[in-house]
Length: 132
Ligand SMILES: NC(=O)c1ccc[n+]([C@@H]2O[C@H](COP(=O)([O-])OP(=O)(O)OC[C@H]3O[C@@H](n4cnc5c(N)ncnc54)[C@H](OP(=O)(O)O)[C@@H]3O)[C@@H](O)[C@H]2O)c1
Image 1 (tube, rainbow, N blue to C red):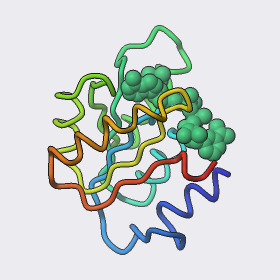
Image 2 (cartoon, protein in one colour):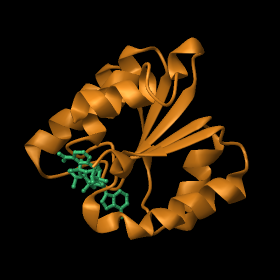
Image 3 (cartoon, rainbow, N blue to C red):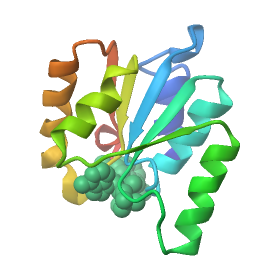
Image 4 (cartoon, rainbow, N blue to C red):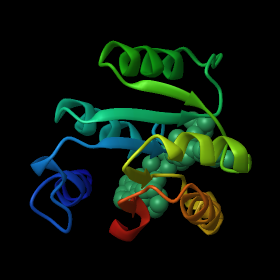
């Protein structure tokens, strides 16, 4: 699954983002799938940011994950799917939005679509749910 998602987003699948360096925002980047998408994006040289609900989590594993993002040059942007302003602000700075929010938030992804429409600058948007 993971390889399919990664290849489809960054490689030879439906999107070939490797042809040019993009500014990529991952929403749900701390999740099981999202953390691999974040790592793959940064590894491939894209300017990568992640929308983060809690920038100082009490869970040591999550804190370690955020540290690993920072160490690989990934920007953490505080925000929430349910905070429209934070979504629009985060989206305004990028070319590509990847949603990897959890199965429980799938319907709420319409909030991301609304924010993308308002921001008006996004070239490509993808959701990890299409790969389930
Ligand atoms: N897991 C799999 O094997 C698999 C395989 C293929 C496809 N998929 C698809 O990939 C997608 C992600 O699945 P997953 O298993 O990786 O989910 P997950 O581990 O539950 O991760 C959910 C992510 O969404 C974030 N999130 C939750 N509520 C949010 C909110 N209100 N605002 C912003 N972010 C929020 C979480 O952030 P916090 O860290 O703050 O909680 C976390 O980063 C789903 O569409 C799933 O169907 C999953």
